[in-house]
Structure formats: C-alpha cells, structure tokens
Length: 106
Length: 405
Ligand SMILES: Cc1cc2nc3c(=O)[nH]c(=O)nc-3n(C[C@H](O)[C@H](O)[C@H](O)COP(=O)(O)OP(=O)(O)OC[C@H]3O[C@@H](n4cnc5c(N)ncnc54)[C@H](O)[C@@H]3O)c2cc1C
Ligand code: FES
Image (tube, rainbow over the protein chains, first blue to last red):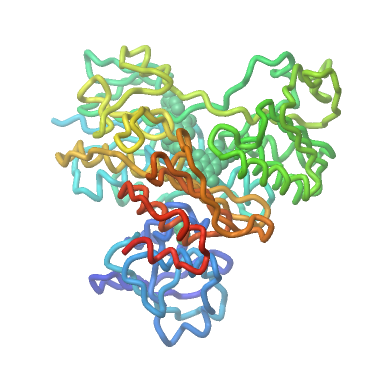
C-alpha cells in the first residue's frame, strides 16, 4: 500500500491509498480522481494518462522506458518530470508520492 | 418528468457514453443496461495479459463500483434488452420490464462470428469476445497441450502468443494468403507470420479449415487439402458479427452495422448508435466505416454525448488501434485500403520499423512496430491529409517531429 497525492490542474488534491502492484494510473481510476483518461487501459498506446511527478520523487519512480518516452514526445505540455502514469508501478517505496495532472490529456 | 437516456450495451462504448454525458453536465437519468453479468470491463487484455495469466480479473474493470453511484448512472448488469419500442419510446427487457427513454443509445457491440464449418458447435470449440468466454478458454487451456486457432487476425494471433507463453503447442490456420489479411499490408502480415513461427507457432496461410473433427468433443481439424491436425482445444477467431438485431427489428436503417451520421444518430432522430455496432460515413476515407477499436468506441461515444447535449459532433476520426504480441507493440494509424504507394522506415530485421501508406501522394495509414513516434506523428499527418516527402520519411535520421512543422 502506498499513499499517493494526485493534484488536479485546478489545485484540488486527492490523497488516496493505492495497492502495491497496481499502477499510478489505476490508483487514479479506482479512486475517482478526474483528469486521467487512460483510453488504452494501460497499454502504453494512447498517452492519455500523462502526469507530472513531483521533482522530489523522480529518482524513486525511475525514468521513462523508450516506448513511453516516444509516446510522451507527442503529448501536449510535456516537461522533464512528465510520465505516463500507467507505466509507474506502485510499491512501498512510493508511499507519499505526489503527482500533478495536466490541464488536458492527449 | 423526463425519462432520460437509456443505453443498451454496457461495454466500452456504452460506459464511455454515460461518462461523457455526465462530464458534459447532462443531469437527467442515465440507465446503462448490459446483458453480461460483469460490470463494464476492458476487452483488449482478454487475449493478452489476462489470458496469459499476468493480469487478474479485478484489473479489467473500467470503473470502480463507486463510480456508478457517484455519477448517478443506473447500471443494470445481467439484463438483456429484447426489443426497442420506438412508438412508445421504451425498451423491453427479457424479464418483461419496460424502460422509457427520451434518447436511446445502442452500443450492443457484437458477438464472435461462428463460420458455418461442420463441427463448429462441438464441445471444446471456443470463441473469444466476452470475459465469460475468456474464462472458459483459459480453463480449457489449463487442461490442454495443443491449441488450434482458426483465423490469423489480431485476436487469433494474440491468443497464439499468450498460449505459447503458457507453454502450449499452437497451430494457426488462415484461409487468406497472409496473417491479419483484413487490415494489414502484405509486408506486415508476412512479418508477423514469421515472428510467430520464430516463437514456435505452426502458422499456415492459404490453409482453410474444412471441418472441426470429433465425435463427442472437438479433437482436431481437417484442412481443405485433407490434412488432419489434432487439438485438445479449438478456437474460432474469425471476426465479429455486429449486434444489429434489435435495431433491425425496430426498423432502423442497417447494413453490416447500424447506419449513423456524424452525430452518431440513426435513422430515428432520438436513437444513436456507437462503437463496434455502428457504421458511419468517413469524409477522410470517402466511404462508410464500421470500426472495431477501443478508440472508436470512446470517441464515437463522446460524439453522441455531444450531440445529445446540443453540440454537433461531425465524427470523422483517424482510426487507430494497437496489438501486443510477445514483447512487440503494433500500432496502426489510419486504414490502408486503397493505398498505391508504401514507404518503409527502419529495418524489419531489427524488430522495429514503420510502413507508411499513401494514396495519390496523401498519407492514409501507418503501421508501426515498436515505433511510437512514427505512429503518433502519422495520426496528425493523416488527419491533416498531409503529403510528407517519401524520401525524407525513409530517412531515419530525420526526426518524425520535423514532419509536423
Ligand atoms: C479479445 C479482444 C481483444 C481486443 N483487443 C483490442 C486492442 O488491442 N485494441 C483495440 O483498440 N481494440 C481491441 N479490441 C476491440 C475492442 O475491445 C472493441 O472495439 C470494443 O470493446 C467495442 O466496444 P463496444 O462497446 O462497441 O462493444 P462491446 O465492448 O462488445 O460492448 C457491447 C455490450 O453490449 C452488450 N449487449 C449486446 N446486446 C445487448 C442487449 N440486447 N441487451 C443488453 N446488452 C447487450 C454485450 O453483452 C456487451 O457487453 C479487442 C476485442 C477483443 C474481443
Ligand atoms: S493508459 Fe494509455 S498510455 Fe497510459
């Protein structure tokens, strides 16, 4: 279990517990956090699950895989801390993780 | 009092429509009626991670139970609609209940097609469309050594890959002269055929199946040329029959799909159809299309929700689709039918490449194997009816971004 804080573009915060083994994307869907569409359901095929990882957490979430990196290359408003949340697996080390959601997906 | 919106079919399209209506601020009642017992779930993993055992069922659900409560969507699972009564604007369920509607959305998807092959209804012959069918297939594979798959489309090939992961012997028989014949180019189909053979799948093209053999239960197939191949389990992976029967019986215009306009509206202005069951006119491709993809289910659902809430939609997407086989990701943007020129980027021998297809100099499709930038850029280029320079496309040192400026 890990506590994850999702912050909407509007500033609204959602602090939820996410089971180990799920992805950060699934944590949002299961807890009704708006702002992540996840059209492809986590197949790394749609780039509609874009989040910004809080800079303090980037070392612990790890970097982008190459497929993820090139999908993100074409998403809007991509920054250094952009990730596809379906590609971040939740584990105990991510307890306390903070991610911010973009204005829009895609 | 308003009767609200009734949605027949609680799959990807129906759920997406319900969600899109709420997002657009529609406040009236929304009833989502589904024949399956499961709440709306993702089908793509059924042939992939779910079948190979890597993904448990509780990760298939599209939404948690709380979603339906919070969004006030009246989800009725295990309920089949048996008739649409257009005169009284209501639908009738198998239990005889009548549910009134102001607007109706038909998102009935379809059922796995069962071709008229002798023996197709023997026990031990499976199809794969629903979670229940996936569970039945998965259970049977647990007892089996040898699987024969009839049809080398996406589902057939994905099941082949998943079954190989589970250690089964797998043979695939395809009547056409290449794998993925309906949607993929010959080069791509040939490449995927070779890929599967490399993983030990006995994949044969131009190999029609004449009969499924067996007295009490299926024990193999007989090919058109007389050869007999043994199997413990046989999977029919031969496409989808769109679920038009309700719409047809109600007198809506249908032709291999329920015919709809750019607002997803059928020939009855109060009835919409979306997803795998709907056929619409594509200006982009100059013909009518019935697409079977998650993207189409979601986007056409949004179009219907827009139209119902008063914002005309003119739905005309660049179709896209993905398929996972072994550790490869295939992503296809656009449709290749009618293409007159192909440009290859990257080397198929290296396991990642993209094929661009043109018609009269306009890019109409891109098939990308482990090549996401090509796929992502192609979506935009196709939408813009762009004419990228084939020589530059071929040149892998030119970044895909450069074609977008
Ligand atoms: C094994 C498999 C793998 C796939 N892989 C991919 C992939 O990788 N990528 C991709 O883009 N697409 C994939 N697809 C296709 C994708 O899943 C479909 O395009 C999508 O599910 C279509 O959504 P839909 O809502 O139109 O239809 P469905 O999801 O079929 O939903 C229709 C629902 O309506 C219900 N229904 C029908 N008639 C009635 C009735 N009379 N009363 C009540 N309910 C009714 C059905 O029970 C069903 O639950 C795959 C499909 C399958 C089967
Ligand atoms: S959910 Fe589609 S890329 Fe993450």
